[in-house]
Image (tube, rainbow, N blue to C red; front, side):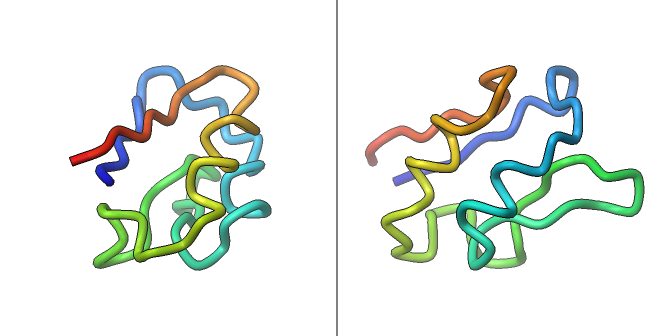
Length: 64
């Protein structure tokens, strides 16, 4: 799986970091970012749920 964060759309709600804390964190300004080495979801089944929890749909998860 591949995870992409649209930084222009992110509003810093933090739902991703709350839902999948092993994959997502927030930068110093409160915006979503992937933890180092987590661009493949780090095998965490909650990565897809975190994308669904994003209120502005800034996160996309694709297979492959």
